[in-house]
Image 1 (tube, rainbow, N blue to C red):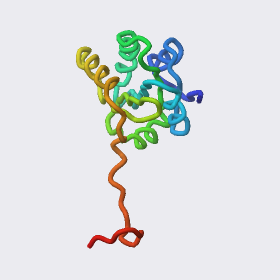
Image 2: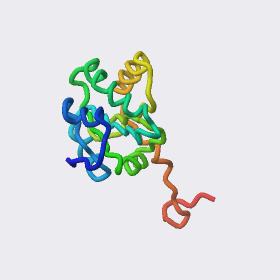
Image 3: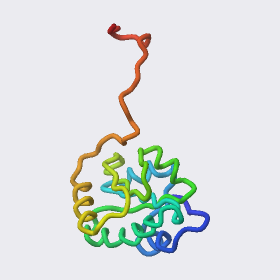
Length: 150
């Protein structure tokens, strides 16, 4: 795993230091998510533009307590967030990206009320894996072989 560089909000650092979150970037996130079971990746965003990212970092340990031993957590450093967000189709800050056994499941974007978070996390943990929103219908050239529909 990586060691984050640069300044990070104290509550983001606390996730790693006190709650066992890993630092992952665009090069390590895939390997980390394949570590088995349910995994949650925090994209907190710029704390000046998106101060609720720090709020999500504060709530995440409480969600871990509400769902004991149900998921591992990772944090993406600021300088890698755009690349990770793009890979998984995340367009809002902050976001919690859910994975199971290396496969994308869903995302919870923005800061939520506690009851909404509990219901959303419970739903995410029960949802089967799916394709990230960035993966669409493949485009195939009419000269690519196979049948030629016209």
